[in-house]
Length: 180
Image (cartoon, rainbow, N blue to C red; front, side, top):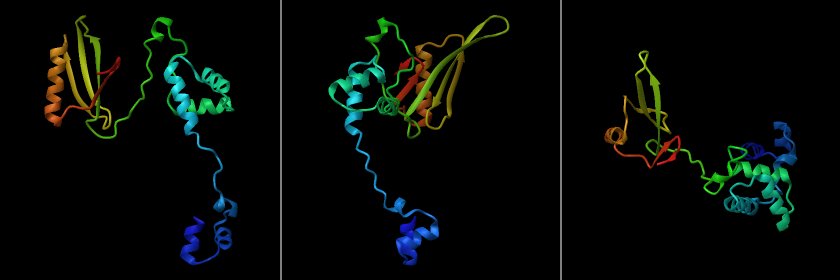
């Protein structure tokens, strides 16, 4: 800010900082923090190999490898990279099939859709199902299909109808049990 004022009015740095009420040290500050890219990549490598490890076990491994790094820094980088697991303890039988997938967000319309089934019951006991289809970027409801039975044929017809209206199918379709 002081630099723009200096150029605009042709005054010294000292005078510009005095007028703006800034300390001169803030104008000359250059960060001395080291780049964390190497540490981030090593944390991601360890987390990719040992998918059940949390940040503490990764920190211990880094210390054994000779990295002099603080536990809190490892935790911060671990969280920033999106490596935190959702549940504390997974059953052992599922650990071998556990995968870390980066959660991507949609950046434009028709890039990613979400699809979900819901079920309810009428007053007389008859059950019905709903298929909902939503664009993740615009949050627009693309389709709601209602029926007593919604099988693969009905889902395919809904998707093809929406694709015909929208002009194309998305790159990804998210469902509550994974990705299609």
